[in-house]
Image (cartoon, rainbow, N blue to C red):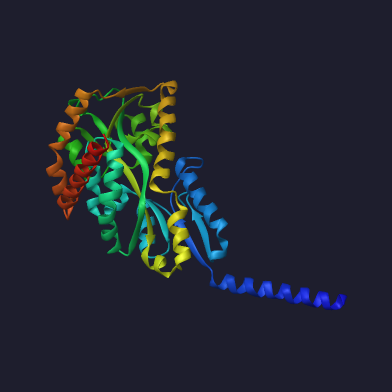
Length: 341
């Protein structure tokens, strides 16, 4: 009787091991490429993805999480995504615009009146169009994520557009930023983000543009004590997947992949809550915050709008159509607000 019991148990174990080896052969691996600093909102988002995969191991899809910059620059990650060397990446808007230039339209200066308006237009109007455009490149555009908005830092405040004239400042290499600040006659210096602090120290620049968290996280605030909250350009990022890989997944695996990363609202709220805390801490670090009043913002906006034609021409392609789409979304948002009020 006892011998029979052990025989049954042994057969059961062999069955389990055999099943496990078959599963191992059939399992797929999804490699994520990104760059995030530990314990930041973006890092927490990747932790959520890891937890979701861990909880759904039975679906036969494993995760390789390379989110400390191991896969190179954002441009290199996009190239690896197209070749299916990476299957899932987070791409800043500027890098994505190298592939889809029309993304640059979303960074027209002072384009949006409020954060809720920008969220609505991006999700309801811009996303479907850009999904079509990325699809033609063999990439699935899953959703937007958040990096904040660009503001101005320097050795002085920037309350009116004329204050940047002849000012030596770091400007992003995007079409919107380059055309805009050249139109303002700023002494624009184009450089990678890694060179900002050193360039401030050597006097090559005296300020520039950056998102709040980057200004704080990289120590720019130690060299440029004035931070003017212009919010002149949004900085959305995109979550992208290799289309061929996506189509190889089962429906259950697709559900896991499409839901593991926090949705737009959750991801944005996580970043914005953290950003609010950072802004509250900046004065204790010796930073003087400046916020535009209504008159100052109106002056910045009017000047910015005069640069739109030149920016759209510089972007080229379907930029005019994307801009019209944004205007449609803004009109729809205004109608929705009027209906709710």
